[in-house]
Length: 245
Image (cartoon, rainbow, N blue to C red; front, side, top):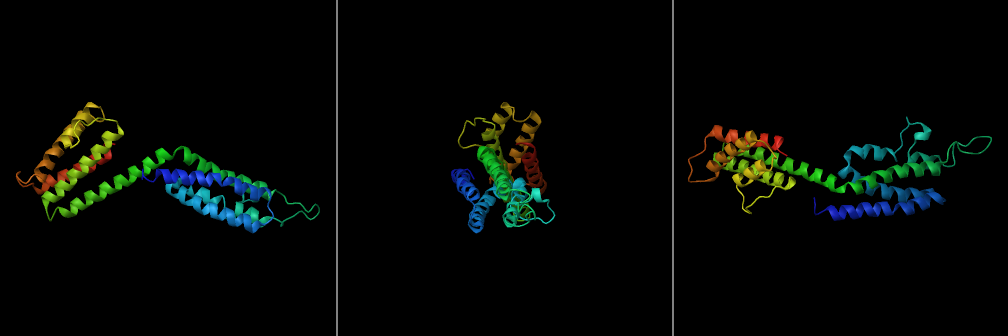
């Protein structure tokens, strides 16, 4: 996700830059089809960005353009304003009850506000997405460990231990905790995280115990792990994933 950041930033900047062309078509609107075509192309590209980075704003973003028969005229969408141009005129004055170009411009500005906001918080948005994807991946790996358990207790326990190590590395990075060794074990991660006050003694002790179970599973010279020990390891890692962030 971090590798995609420059492309996403560039795409948002490009879409924001295109506003000049859209505004010009609105200011000098002669051919409604030309404006609608240009706007639809812009809107389709923008929707992909909003759906990915701000799904909570997606429905509202769509609402700025799409028609809705239950909506009041002054709350209408760009599509409705464009379609209304030249219709619904006052029988005496031959004037519309509103300025469709101005109303369309206001809706378009609402679009731009959403994109502009995303351009300023792109770092945190991408970090949130990456965090969710990482959490989903680890949970799937723990599910795989459960599937492995009836086949190989060692393999299941080792996979759970690897998930725990990976999670603690990410936690250390997030909290700027220095890990002294490049090749880390659970102990190498656990002690600095406790000293860095990322979590308390009880959590530290719990992770130590999980590390002991992981060691039994991952070292062939150790005794064979028991079924309940592997179960405790998997469930313990689940718990740490939820409580340590």
